[in-house]
Amino acid sequence: MKSASRFEKIAARMWNLLNEGKPFTPIFTIGVFLTYALLFSGDFSGVFTGFLLTLPLFVLYWRYDFPLFLRNYLWIPLILWLFARGTNEAVLPLFAWGTGLYFFFTVFFWGTIYYHLRIGTDWSNFTRFWKLVLKNSDSTSGNAQEQLPKVALLLAYWQGATVEPITSPDLFYLWFPAVLFAYAFILHRNLFDWKPELPAELTVDAEVPPSKKVYVLVIDGMRKDRYMAANTPFLERLRQGGTEYTNMETVYPARTVVCFSSMFTGARPEDHGIHSNMVWNTIGVRTDTVFERLRDVGKSGKLLGIAHLVDAFGSEDVRTVTAVMHNDVADRNIVERAKRIVREEDPDLLAIQLIGTDQTGHSRGTLYSEYIDKIEEADRLLEDFCAELETLGKLDDATLIVMADHGQADGIGGHGHLDEGERFVPFWMYGPTIAPGKKVDTHRHILSLAPTVARMLGADIPHDSRGVLLSEAFTDSNKEARHGQDHRIPARS
Image 1 (cartoon, one colour):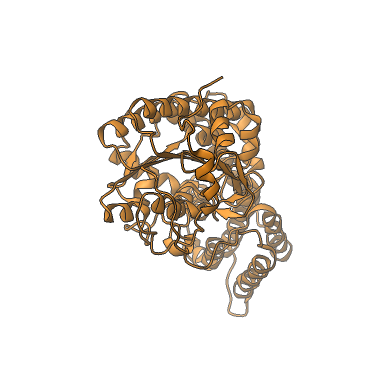
Image 2: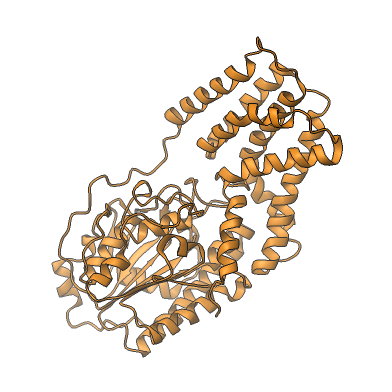
């Protein structure tokens, strides 16, 4: 299987400019306004002045997301603007042009052409994808209920500032942005209350039973409730035979690179500095990682995943997989690459990111049978991978950790701002030092992965880790329960 090429890594960064909602809003609005002026009006006089007057609104929408139900409040400023200033003859055609381009980009270019070329979805995907665009609740470019009122206000404001003579007594272009900033501040201060409360104190160190190897099996974007609806005999044997954390919570925003950064540093997003899939700096996470702590004790760790993760962790610790392949073979190819890494590099820690479930959720939705099919496929492939580990003798005194980085809502983008189905993720551990058949209901966060893995492999905890050690999985009675048992993974009945 091919690694992600340099071109793919650059293209992934560029695509996030259109995927993430913050950069998309100004890029799309400017594109709509200028193409309309070029193709239909032919008049660019006043465009730059109008843009400067509209700039505070661009800054506002960069500063404040309006996710989930907050997007309903975006219509009030637009209505206020239209009521106070009215419309000129160009506004409604400009709205129509912008709306048409928006749905062409999301439904046809992204949802149909892009996904067909990248992961092989059918050319008729637009027949379902428009529903995902309308339902999406996360602050991405594919959230029509958030993006359309934002873009409409920016276009109307810009158009008005372009054609209306601005006189010194006209203070509207000063007080309207000021009122809007106050409005957004009050809304977010009083109603934006669903961010997880992550641990504030640094991780308290403790001794845990050692493990010779640790394999972290991440099914990207796997919703907990949809997992429970799937037929997954292998993963169920691990879940029932190990320790499950029933209240394992992801971080905010629940983007893949943000989640993985917290998982393998133990740090909060405000500490490791990654806040989206678009990594703006060149140094990646600004805290130390479990991979660095393993090197300190002469051990190695590898993360097999998509190109985005290189920007966070660097090429030394990440083995990339190309994301340009049919989704029906993606996870199979990743597992084959993981087997090769085990045979050729034999890392003490290997984390594998299966991407098929997440990509299906993005392209086809989570509430359809295709999404469950991908979870069931992941079950079969992980059983195959663990059978290879057993054949190679790598499961002796090894620990398996099965988890998702985040769940998914139903819609394009599908995760980020913790809508239903995103927040709490599947998480369980299995191995000779892990208590069998145990359920831990205590609230924990995916930050706990890094310190727990580090201590299991005899390394120090990453310096900025705030995740709580998952000590509940290691008990004195655990040793008695496991003593004399066959530690191999139970065979399929």
